[in-house]
Image (tube, rainbow, N blue to C red):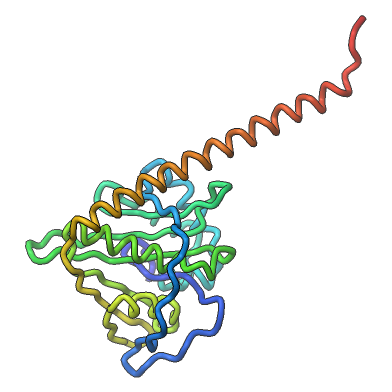
Length: 241
């Protein structure tokens, strides 16, 4: 494979050993996780393209293999990021307090064929942010958004060895078929409801507000650091009479 653009594969290596797969390639179900504190997940636009590139290039070779299905180099990642269509697809992200994009998901819509609309999902999480269910939360957000825009089927292409991501999708009800080193799954989505529309609207507004607060805090820290640098410099300047 030489072109990165068609690939929408998962990347979020498990923090602990994952359970073995069934013959059908699906991880056995486990008890539902406890509700988490709300994670601010926001839609990303054109102005986030550079941060998306930095996020993906921060993945090591193993994680790049999980995300794209091959060991993508920086040039291939740059082509992938340059090809992102923010008008057509949906990109979701989670930022930390320093405005580092620590997790992101790509919901890519299939061409309109007149049949039920479908989409593909891919996600990546930086190593330092693992173990916080960010992959699951991004999947849930993508499913909700897909329902709200009329998508009926969500497809997942994932390496068979990536049991963490197989588990996320299978817990949501996706069924998988294995084909050698890869597994393909799909999830039939129920129609949107008033609750899904309102929930997504509220979550997006809260995430946008959270981002603005982090941005203002970062700007304040930079301003403070600049002032402190000036003050330290002026301490060594001899004052004239």
